[in-house]
Each structure stands twice: as C-alpha cells, then as structure tokens.
Length: 314
Ligand code: RIB
Ligand code: CA
Image (cartoon, rainbow, N blue to C red):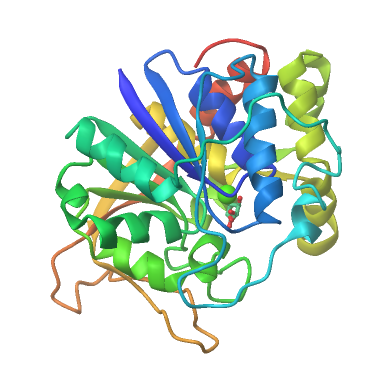
C-alpha cells in the first residue's frame, strides 16, 4: 500500500490529483500540505478541504497549511488561469472540515520520521514546504521512499515565462534545495503535460456524458482553464499536469520511458529564472539526481482519469 503525502497549491487540476489519490486502490492519501502558488493561500486551503468533502472523505485526510510565500522570490498568482477561487469561479460552499494546527513542514518531517522508507512525497506545487522540511531536518532525504514532482520543462518551453514552468518559477531556490537533497526524485515536466496530458473536446464530451458528481466537479474546476487554453494557447481543452503526475505515482506503467539525468535549476532573477536544465549530454559530468519522465501513456492516464470520474477506483 503506497502511503502518500501530497503537497499542493490547490486549484483546478490539483483537485483532480487529490481525488485520484483518494480513490486509489493501492495507495492511501495520509495528508495534504498546502504551499503558496496558484491563488490566494487561504483559498488554496479551502479548496483542498472542499475537494476532500466532494470525494466523500470529509475529516479523513488532514490538511496542513504551509508556506504562504516563496523562500526569497516575489511571484504572481494565476487567477487568470484557474478563476478567482481557483475552482473555475464555482464559488463552492465552505467545507465542514477545518485545517490542522500543525504546520505543513512539521507534518512532512513527522510523517517521514515516523515511517522511514514508507512515505511517498508527491509535489504538485512550488517546493517551499519541502525545501523548508529538508533544511529543518536534512535526515528525511534518506528516509523518504520516493519524491515525485510535477514541474520544470525538459528541453521544452515554459508556461509562465518562455523558460520556466510555474511550480519551479515561483520558488526556484526551494527547487534547487530539493533537487540537490539526495532524495530519490522523479520529474514530470510540462512537456509531458503538453504531449500526453491534454483533454480535448471529444474527451470533455465523454466526461459531460458521465453525469457523476466527480465528472461535474471536473468540468466545474476546469471551466476557467479551458477558457485560458483556448484564448492564450489556441487549444480547446484542459491541461492535466497534476493528475497525470498522480497517475504516474499510482501506476508506474503510465510513465513509459524514464531516464536518469543531472538536473539543475536557475535560481537567478533574470529571464531564465526557474528554468530546469536537464543535462542530456552529460556535459557537466555530474551524477544524475533525477529520474526524468520522457514518455507517458496518454491512453493509460485517460483510462485512470475516466475511471475516477465515473466514481470508480483507480
Ligand atoms: O505549471 C503547472 C503547475 O503549476 C500545476 O501544478 C498548476 O497547478 C500550478 O501549480
Ligand atoms: Ca499545482
């Protein structure tokens, strides 16, 4: 049984990743930690609590508020992509469950120390919480079972700047600490999303026909993303960065090709802020620190997504 701690900046597709983890046959979502990122921090906390309620698990998955600001950098939130509430402007009601008093950083440290070698840490947000946890207790790097992150771009365009993907751009200093921590790391970059993790009109029509609480929730929280993709990217559909990452966590067969590479982040303040350099040629002569996903199965991902949206388990 995979034991998952999920760090999220809960908006749009983050919520679908949370639901997939809660509906996993072979995994247990043991905690959600909140990181600054997509939208207003307190709204991110509420979105996580509400998602747990929609999944029918109210009170069963603790939510720990974490870093409200990146380590050093200023950043911008992206309500233009996810809606002012991060949920497609659905303005859902407040969930019954309330957040924990324990800080996210302590929740991550305690979970890993209490169960060395057993916790899979999944990152679908900027990495401030994880970096702080590593700075507070460096020993967790050798005790975590696996660290998966959605972020960066492997020899591919960024999405928030020409160079950088949002999660890394928000807190490149944190990302640099994490990538150099010695944890066993798997990277799912933005290129995987754009090549294998898009849901187009035929798929959205399939989801519309499902008429389940999960499918209706999916369409609602992705409402603004669909508008953004059409206007800004010329693509009629939604992108699924966090849910394809969770699919890879839950079912390693979704990642059809991976390669071990040395990866470094530019934590500077210039145009290349947040770029993830994957040393494809080994030119830097440094030991690989990341297992990079190079190919993913769109079919396997969609199968898992549809199963969850139909109310099933994945
Ligand atoms: O670049 C996409 C990532 O940034 C996703 O995780 C999205 O939720 C935002 O956090
Ligand atoms: Ca996210």
